[in-house]
Length: 263
Ligand code: ADP
Image (cartoon, rainbow, N blue to C red):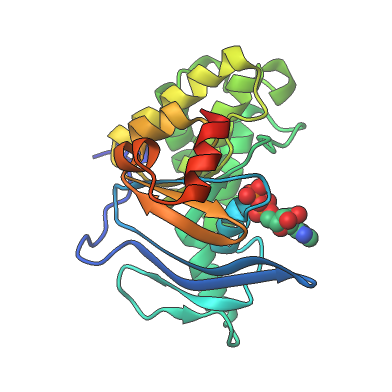
């Protein structure tokens, strides 16, 4: 398999243990306890969807996983290896290892405005992972092709539509070849007519076996791709289950009220 073919398939890895296990995740901002003991697991190839009211802590979970926030307590482990105690002193090496497992796609694409599409995509692999420019370029081209943007490689972000920018944001995350893709409301900043093209890419990634945790309010989409849906409220997971069950027969009153409002 060439590097270019490689680029569009998820990295292989052990499948015995869950890819990621999070236990008792806690995070406060000042006196505000934003995460109050979150447990979750995701296996390779699974898609978890996090739903819940604004401010319930969904984004903070993703940010703690990706090292953008430092959790106050809890444990995170990958591939059944030793879990890292976040309440203790986490070594720089452990932090870097945790961070490298995942790549995040933000609500706003966060592309560098002064770099072309191709430069935006290869920047991470070349600068952070030491991949050669030639290899990074070959992979980037394969990924851009994959999301229908091959002809935009030399364009600047401002020359693209919001949906195209977000697809480049996804390619940038894929180019890092993470085990886990984290999506923080990837379509909520888009005009409604551009949402479909981004969801289509996400659906494709799910079909190809990428492991993903997605925060979204697109419940029809969640129902289609999620293996498990986690309903958050006030920093805890109130209810979790397969989408067919959780969306049609939620057990908890709080879940029912949220779904009634949003559906
Ligand atoms: P959600 O993604 O479910 O909308 P968030 O994880 O973004 O929720 O936020 C959870 C809570 O944490 C909110 O009350 C929010 O105001 C607060 N919060 C998030 N980030 C910060 C921060 N950097 N400083 C202070 N409070 C924050």
